[in-house]
Length: 134
Image (cartoon, rainbow, N blue to C red):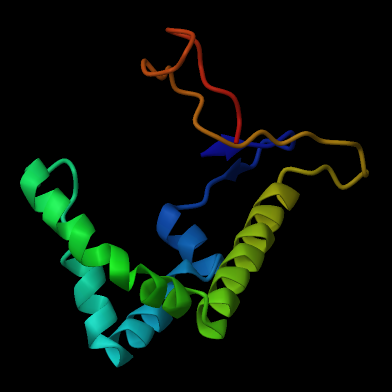
């Protein structure tokens, strides 16, 4: 929620932004792509993480996965994935532009719009200071 110079309250819910940035639609396309390749889907979703798996399982998984890594990389460099990433990026830029245009004065004055989380992040390098805009 924000207020522009004209006193209008502006807001954009995350779900609406994701829809405008084509994230919602691209997740459906991504699911369809993975459903066409069940072996790739199984490889990706059965991957253990370093937070939940003991080191012996991770060691076994690395030795199992390394020879198959090229197949996974080739699969994700396919034209469908590249187009999907491009469409997501273009949608995100368009959605952010539309959101920022709501703040701009109609007179054409220069306006700076800062994006990001300005909460105090305790994990930041400088403790107690807000992080910069994204």
